[in-house]
Length: 328
Image (cartoon, rainbow, N blue to C red; front, side, top):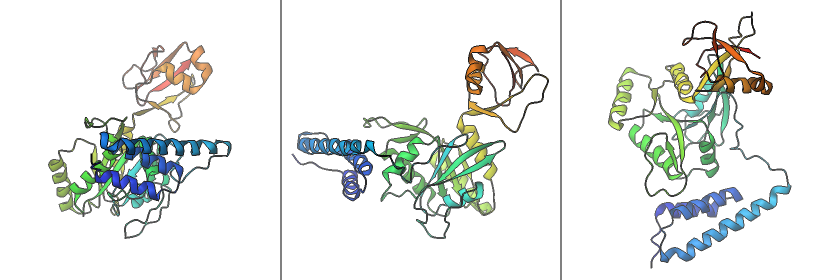
């Protein structure tokens, strides 16, 4: 029986042959095994792939005695959320990072300037988000380690170029993500997907919307794609909508800011506690200090949904902007 291997399998096999690290080889082999048609004609090939995966994993385990060196795609998370900026070549990812953060990635008027991820911290009001510039994603090749970086991030920004074919860019990036089992939250997952999937918070940002007529092009893009994801038109050249972009990141991050105060004193509104949305007073107390969790009696709250100084108990759900006075 013929194997009838699809092109995506052959592409994964090519990446396996060209892989330089054990991790890259394992990632390529696992993708090959997920893609290969499952029938009698491929039984031996499936068994061979499993053997190679097992062999490479044993090889990787032998290195545990030595200190593990981080690869360039290992970016430690900082700030309120880690936000990965991905997109096709020359869409302006590095320019966006430069405009919003303290990072200085290399920028050039030609594609494929960025070869490794570059993180930077973007301030928004009194919190900061970590934005990470990344190499371009193309249908030809995506580094497996970059795929892992996208999977780990809190939010994914897909940056598109309005001067190119918007719909094609949009479809290509979503298709690439789907090939690695990465789907925007709420998107349907194909029935043929057998392995676990990664559901991610996604924002669509469209760059180079520098002129009024390009704003009309952006609206047409939204209508034609029936886009159900948060989207924002940007002009990095003119600095347009950069604050709106950061606001969308904040809204999607699932965090709130609350402020602690001591009795008889004013709160420090420059140093909020950043906690997950729907956190309770009890959970906040545990984050402030582990002893607070045991000793907490009640708290007084100043906020939009309570009377000033209202007494609340452990199960009170904290709201964005709450000022809390904890009593032990």
